[in-house]
Image 1: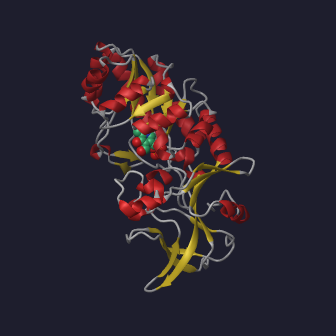
Image 2 (image 1 turned 60 degrees about the horizontal axis):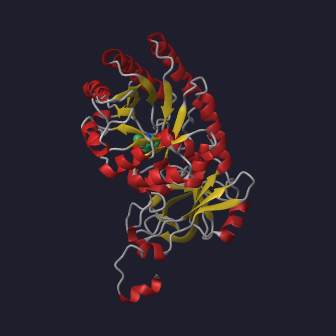
Amino acid sequence: MEKKTFVTREQLEEITKTYPTPFHLYDEKGIRENAKRVKEAFAWNPGFKEYFAVKATPNPRILEILRDYGFGTDCSSATELMMSEAAGFTGHDIMFSSNDTPAEEFQMADEMGAIINLDDFTHIEFLEQVLGRIPETISCRFNPGGVFKISNSIMDNPGDAKYGMTEAQMFEAFRVLKEKGAKEFGIHAFLVSNTVTNEYYPMLAEKLFELAVRLQKETGAKIRFINLSGGVGIPYSPDQEPNDIYAIGEGVRQAYEKILTPAGMGDVAIYAEMGRFMLGPYGCLVTKAIHEKHTYKEYVGVDACAVNLMRPAMYGAYHHITVMGKEQEPCDHKYDIVGSLCENNDKFAIDRMLPKIDKGDLLVIHDTGAHGFSMGYNYNGKLRSAELLLKEDGSVQLIRRAETPQDYFATLDVCGEMKKYL
Ligand SMILES: Cc1ncc(COP(=O)(O)O)c(C=O)c1O
């Protein structure tokens, strides 16, 4: 499928008069339309709730947009909890799906009334020590081990993942938690990341629904929700077929009718914690070509680097690139598109066929709306970029300013001459 940008060159030229590149730009219209589709796809389940994974795009203005659709947030740290609270989420609108959790974070989640999702059996005792009690609503994260297959192809290897409890631990956890006063239970699992198939959620749902029926029957614990977590993917590359969220919702419904309804569990709510699917395609990294270099390969140096988008350097991930204004020109030049880090993996694209790039051209790096800005870092003293929101009316809102040297130096024990930069 042809990958189109949600912004035109003319718009970008206007935006860059006020906000210098590089920056991340988000598409409010796209975010809203997609959120509406997600809501519709699961409308058959009255308790359905998407808890947006804050780690994907931690910005309160983005969270506020999603709150309009009745969504909650999924947090995994103290600062994500704080941000959710600031964006107006409270109580059971927050899911705390953390792992290796510090005591203070459990404490904070509990004070906010968030639903705590336990990653490990030993966290029961830990939580009880921290809070002096077990919350009435509690969730446990399941890891079935082994490999997760769809249509005979191995999707991922849950057995190697650090997350979640074994099946035996889930049974024991529900018994112990019930004894200690828990009244409403949830089951959570995240087995595969970025699945570009409509089968992942339905298959995961079947597994979790079957487990839920057995858990409720054998432990007497009242299961109130099943959290399918994240993992619904997006087509980063143009040859991938996008997921159809309506087909996914329908697949989960069929599994629900087949397994939960006949077991008298037709009141169980379905939760999700999607990050990538909610925001990925609705954000891009805008950068400018500032150098070209001709050695053993053809390089184009841009003003963004891996600190702005780590996925290509970290996973070799593909991100589509559009050279703005040259959409109709032939892709007859082979380039490595590189940033300025002293790291040879700082390449947004390797051997990519693109139209001829000239210095000053604006490049849009697609699908950076989730796990893009948020994975940023400060290597080489590089600063994090701004985040901008392209609003539905075409105006642009600065939703995070770019870092300054003052921000970078702010945590140092400052010596002598450096004071002049603060
Ligand atoms: C606990 C949890 N929930 C949800 C997500 C969101 O996943 P995705 O962005 O793939 O939907 C993640 C991602 O790492 C996660 O760790």
